Length: 460
Image 1 (tube, helix red, strand yellow):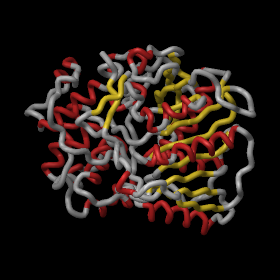
Image 2: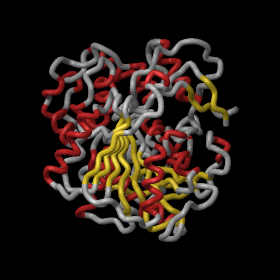
Image 3: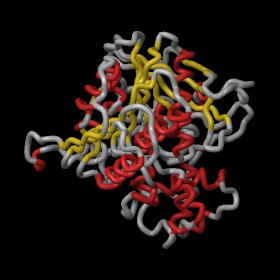
């Protein structure tokens, strides 16, 4: 593994990916899968930025495609297995295909979950192992259930098939290096593309019921795969994944899961319509909603929300199966019809994207960057206040980190959430009620590195 300075800034986001600078410069180190590119080659040449991003995406894969990795094939006869069942486990994944830190180990698994309407669905994920167990007063290997930020909506966008597990040192590597087992869902539709009967599996992007189900059922499945795991666990997520973690905490009020110790929520995208109206952000969101729109609403007409230019980009996306790295280069101004927010189906999808404002289980740590261009701190505080207004006894610790952006909150908040998780596994009591803190910054804002300007590239 090597950490190299790059001319790409890979920024993963809220429900989405923050727009990166135009991709240009040398591309000799970006190795694409000719097999995949030939299979999905669009009918006309790609924009150079999109083409370069697609090469970068392919160079970051552990396997060229989930379609030719037999791990993602669901075992026959499992379509009616109960939710939470372990369907397949790869106990020792070949770590040489990944860009992991030394002394970490990797497993992959497929388990049964439920869609937003309760239909059984197979989901893939990974389990990242520390070198040795961290402290745990409850016994067993302490478990953190990781919920990733937006990677895309294609089956090709499974974090378990990215060399860096999609968010590398942003969270999963850090958790494992501190001694926690990281149980991580890909989310349904990312990785596994069909169930055992051949039915297509889609990613219900931003749907909180679907994604909280995927988190919920990953826990018993991981325990089946590895009984040495601690029964106790903490959930942690970023952006899209943070909203899913918040929604899971709400789900656990009526459906408790043994061993739950609390939730860490970093820069949560709690409402689709709260996202900023930038020229690329909302088109990227809607591009990722296309699988949901076409499968869950078969009478829906994409031209009701996309312009002809936008429809062409939908076509390209279907052909190339780009992930967030590619999507942020594909979308832009002029892709959406005026008034798309008023569409009744989009309003239903927005309602299904809401987190916060309901009773939740266990303590919650919420960490928010004060300069987040994607998740407005005021919106996060509004969701907290809505929750407290209805449930004033809620145990919430809110940490505001001034001058910190969307992805960097994972670094600025590292010490805070690691200490908080350690306290949960130590059995320490939580200070009851609501508590808010604003960080005292060590140096002037202008002296800090603002965004990530590097990426991890595995040596070939």
